[in-house]
Length: 125
Figure 1 (cartoon, rainbow, N blue to C red):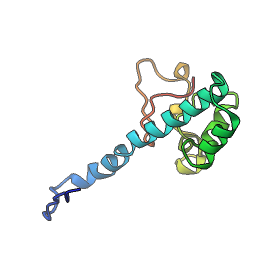
Figure 2 (tube, rainbow, N blue to C red):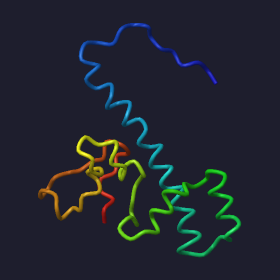
Figure 3 (tube, rainbow, N blue to C red):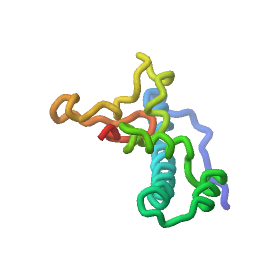
Figure 4 (cartoon, rainbow, N blue to C red):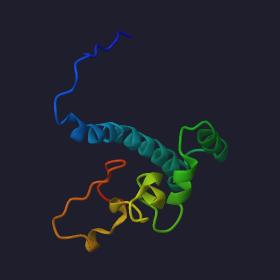
């Protein structure tokens, strides 16, 4: 692969204000793909019963799907969970879950919610 050119020039004034957001948002597609792969394996095994237990266990062991995320999907209230970071209370300022876990009925009318961790717009259900 060819090397990517990077300039050695100092970033313009104000870049430090948006740098953190840009770095976090660059991971959103990774979280989305991770979720989709795990959901696909979950649906094949639990919903459609299209794959064997042996294949399912292999996928979890090899990291094709996230075993912890699938374990949460099997629990009531977590069926649509986007990622595990959104339910970890240690990553938030007030010791609560992420804003995407708030039911849409509890939010202000017309307010758009977007998770800072993974870009989810509401996985509470």
